[in-house]
Length: 309
Image (cartoon, rainbow, N blue to C red; front, side, top):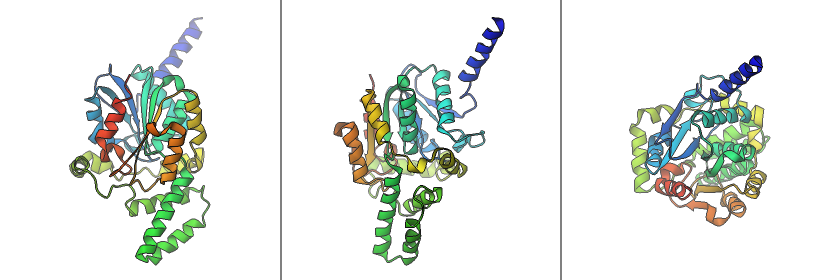
């Protein structure tokens, strides 16, 4: 009996300590409504959210938890499997370490895929989910990037980049290289930035230019993460339609917030999300691109305020 009790204590300690070696940032009062921010990528980090928006969110009555996934960003040195299973173990460790029963998960870009899958597996731990610039269909996202880039190159009579697009269109669309090259075109064509940011966004982007931590990590990608997630989870072919329909059937609250200038997503993809969740649960904002929490910060915060119970 003593052996069994010792074993149970060991297993409990192992479970509750899972997240202890992660670099985790918190903002606000632990008694307030808990929000966990899940960053994009794979291979990116949460720094820009933390330095621009997390504290303001906390000032509106939230306990905000933010971290970089294992093997990515500030946790790059930690040994990682780059699987959803391990990602969920870390998330469950965070729930345990901070004595959380239910939270709102805010998933940005790839982080929204993580949030959706986690909610399917652990619905009892979800108060609500906010999908911020999240790909409903990865394949639709790649097609949107390629079609938009191709038009830009045609208008510029850019024969070199048109030849690259031609090569890209001949590739296996599920391949890691296909995804990587598509995102390279998205970056070079400014698909992640609004053309006319509002005054608040301009202030925030100015802050970013002078913030040493953001500058250190803003363009820092962990290249092992996307490759390994592709090998282990085939993430380039993920389509969330069935998953989101399932969450809706289970009665979980899911909301979306997107920018009309986000070059990664077609209007069709946003409309598909509206069809699933309902028009009133998806905000589609002007003067806004991929970083909705910067481009339309107040609207982003207002959405979360409306979810508090």
